[in-house]
Image 1 (spheres, rainbow, N blue to C red):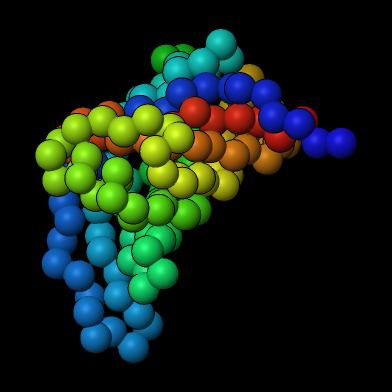
Image 2: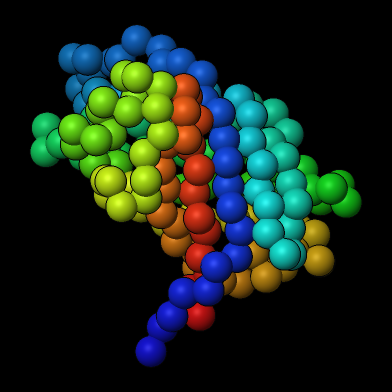
Length: 152
């Protein structure tokens, strides 16, 4: 049976959004920039190396669908790429906190991500060889925190 083991915390600051692509034949997207961030855990310490991006798709069902790509550099100079997708429940708790630049609790709304890492650094090959899931919350104005778990 599969299990989850806590691996790291991902904290980030976003910038944006750009105006939405309403009316696009490919569907509406809202672009957010991942401007700052860190990965911190027992086996990793990294920071965002350059801005990443989220082609966020708002849904008529009250859920948003992030599609994020971001690049990190570790404290020992390894390059790690991260791509994640998932679901963000745009319920009252989330919307009110986002508008007021307040924090939410992990249990206030459904914010779950499937995270896929990519690196060529031998020390971090474990990132290439496992699946990762995360739950998230807002932590303030344009700030998000994820707890990332390795699927065992």
